[in-house]
Length: 234
Ligand code: SF4
Image (cartoon, rainbow, N blue to C red; front, side, top):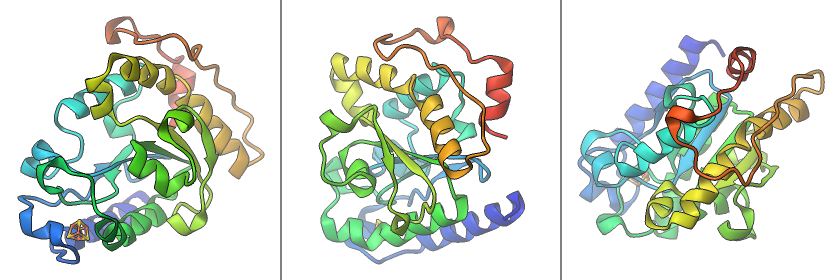
């Protein structure tokens, strides 16, 4: 699919989401939050559900957790517009409770169809609800910072998944924030591995920062070389 075709397909899906009444979450929403980003990206971030700021603005990850996600991306030289960001459920659960299983099931076709359009090489899960969709049978404390194959039934036909803590959890615990910055340094290598596995002719390599590097101030963040940055999203 060309970029305009992907954009049109994603816009049509977003319009469906905004009109959706398939689960009880539609009753409390101000705005549905379909997701946003580069239609030609190779990397899709999947969180759990919109919070109060996301519900108010109709955009994913725009509150404090979103600010942290931007800092995490910046630590490897990426911007949020380089990737696509969405959630497991597209409408805000009341009082920021966890989404119920029937709500997750009702919303699943939208994410599956988004992934079919985007055809990412790498799905980055943020938090345990998202992780359990793509990496079932484990725990977030064990799985964060690791990759696994993705079940094509999710809509991501030839992707790998990389698990991370939810940024909101990182805001509540310094140790999780430290782990999140360390995990983020592994994303470029996970992308390169995902590319290689779905296209063995890919020979580019990427040397990640050491996983125990810890939080890195954005101003001093190590930047991938210009060549690496160009090759990540072309
Ligand atoms: S959460 Fe998903 S399934 Fe439920 S109303 Fe919103 S878009 Fe529809």
